[in-house]
Length: 422
Image 1 (cartoon, rainbow, N blue to C red):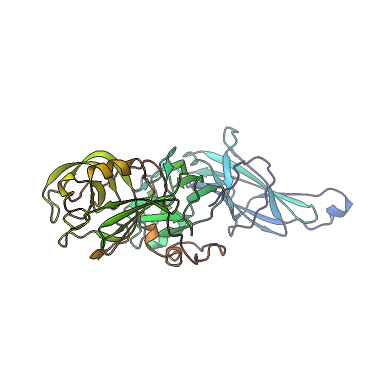
Image 2: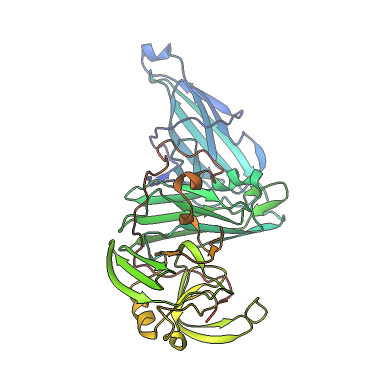
């Protein structure tokens, strides 16, 4: 969902499209003026149904209107407190700004107005269920609040276990993104349902504010699981920076706003432990960290490294490697990482941040979907095919992707072990 205003569900005027839901609720019709008395009042149905019980904590107020539009909504709890909510962009419903409380009763009053001015008001009172005892699906939002991210930063939500295909549309409807200034985008699922990404056809414009909500607490997911938590974050997009690594030349090109600012010799993965080719995103930055590969194939060592920047879950980093400076620019000797000099690694830490794009080409293996935040490793046409919901008509495939994305940004969770090569 793109940028839209927040509202309080209290007799506000709204232009809304119908939601394909129905309910039996109490009805009141009114008209003013002699002409309006004979005008047909709009037909209106509201969900949840009146006196409904065991409603999920993720419930929304939905409407079906014929012959008019919704012009007023009021939602209160059983203590008379107003419940804040946001309208869906398509007008299909009103989503409470926080999960409803368990075993509480809520009243929704919705008014629809016809073209003639005649109105219909329906009131529905429903009771939420107790807090579910079903197993939860753990969600992780890889978008932290109060940060500055790169222009290639995808909004990423991970799930454990993965979301089955039949449940993805319901989950996706509870994932919201607003951008200011507006920059529409779409969600796309990995095949196994373990991650879903949100991005625009183009890279984010520098200065954009992005607000994210994963409203999954209490959401029924399939027949036997529920969502675990409510997660929100708001951050900004910084200036444009990107890195391009060419295995043929063993050089990294650093670009800011599309212009080269430095070339850095690199040593990539040797043939037995090759680096991945593809479009990746900086996920973490560490001034100092430990690579512990004991138990990993082709691993078995422990080493402390400085100025490390992760870009795959499999353990590929750009990092300081003073031991390989003699090979950088000529020979690949690493276990898959991009080795650079201590001086270059320190400089890069001050230029790049989380969300910058890294493009690697010419290595022996291709980047696998989900090995990092791989939203940019596919075309827009292929990306939108991964959505579990119809993509708005305006989000057609982008004709040409910009050549040089990236930005100064900062910070992200670090969920995976720091496995890497020297």
